[in-house]
Image (cartoon, rainbow, N blue to C red; front, side, top):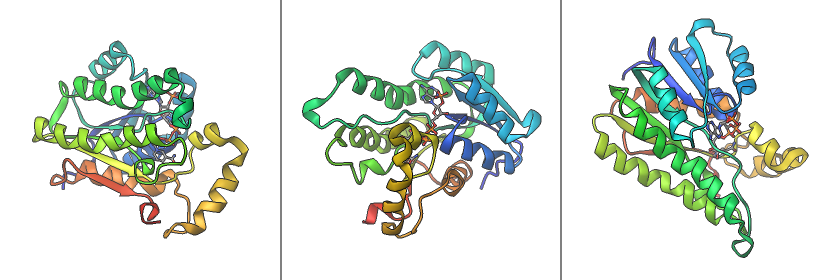
Length: 243
Ligand SMILES: NC(=O)c1ccc[n+]([C@@H]2O[C@H](COP(=O)([O-])OP(=O)(O)OC[C@H]3O[C@@H](n4cnc5c(N)ncnc54)[C@H](OP(=O)(O)O)[C@@H]3O)[C@@H](O)[C@H]2O)c1
């Protein structure tokens, strides 16, 4: 087990939701964290929430923009682990109503962004380091109708990690697949209906609750620390894939 203490972890998406939860867990493990997101205001608020002084730094960048990704990773320099939780709410059109511009934007943000991150991180990630990306329950239990695109994109991450784990060995590459987590993405997606969605889902889940970011952060910490885990997808979904 390679403990995180005093290591440097870059979290793209670290200004909100699951990524901010992982940043809190990284700080609690006495490591340094660089949080990355597009909005400077969200990054500033997250830095205040983390309240860990020089252990936390922030870089505003859009991971769909190759120049931004290259500049970010060059500014970070040598580092130990890359985590990406970046993503935007998924499109939910029945297939016949698909808005191709929205779908291309979603794929660009989620999947192409991960490819760009891996392309540039490989230059400065330390030997023994890891990359962890985020997929999600929608690949196992797609919303019907409208779940085809998000399911395809989320599902592709497992195969992305398996191939990269071989190509980049001994660097490790893994995926976390969360279930429903109460984050600002839900507020953006369904607004005030969020509490009704959660009230309906929570009692059906084997875990009997909707996760908080703190509930799923340990999966990311495990994948960074476990030197024997690579090419793997870890579900942390309260048993959602079973129902
Ligand atoms: N919440 C859930 O129930 C759930 C379930 C399964 C899977 N997931 C997946 O988990 C990931 C994180 O979700 P979340 O709920 O934590 O969402 P969130 O609270 O909205 O956080 C998303 C983060 O990604 C950043 N981001 C988005 N696009 C970016 C880009 N192009 N470049 C850099 N940063 C970017 C956002 O910051 P800026 O907006 O400032 O860029 C923010 O920090 C998503 O990919 C989501 O699909 C979530």
